[in-house]
Length: 335
Picture 1: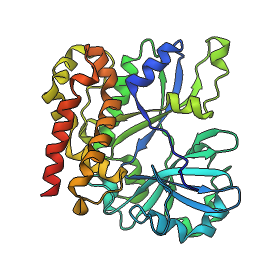
Picture 2: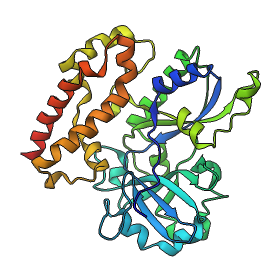
Picture 3: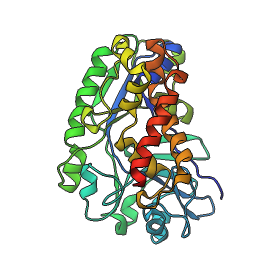
Picture 4: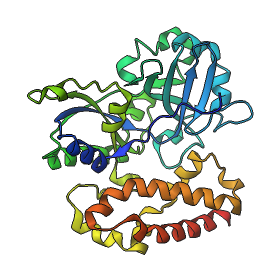
């Protein structure tokens, strides 16, 4: 097996809103979970029963590891065969000491795997892990994983009318801000008080009273699930909170190259970049710059493209400034 079975990239609110408007703006009910800040990993049990650890972009093994995740999975193969059905992938965050900085999870005594989604390859259906933990992720059958593998629970519901969503979005932002100050799930589960990242919101149902073709939506289908899931970072996580779909005037200043780059090219994003690319901060070389610039550029473009469009700008107006800012920040990491 050469290529991982990847989880999709979770979109920002304005991107999902635009997709919803393009499709007729269905009114949806969402469930929120806390967004953990770790290193994304997954465990695939093949139809033949082989246990395969994966990072976001790589199939892992003894010679290719990510923060010890592969070693941990491979040492517990029988446990994962017991609790995860063949042909399924469980996605989660590998989190704990030394994996990320400035979040509550960094204070864990040992690493843990927090599951957020389960994917049935044969049917193409994907689910929030909390909704199928008894059916497809039977952790009670693997007691040795009890203190190491956890399921991120679904929380509060939000009803979103995509044509008139400002109030709902502000409520979501307020909750994400609270999480970025104190992650409630980490506090409840581990007794650790500290900041989280924000929220992920999963579509649960189409609200009543809409057209029949909308009512038949099955959000477990991967193409729909990936289209309507979105994330919101809390203000205190370090990525700002200027996410409202109607704040075009405020965005004008960010579309000026240097100001835009200064806002988006941050040490926190660079840390995330190094985790995703599986680069060690103390082992960076000048040859890694292009790889880092490419990842940072793609990540920033994905996050900002709708805001730029609303402000009347294009990515080409700011890409040079972003690249230069990444170069300067990368040079600081080499010192």
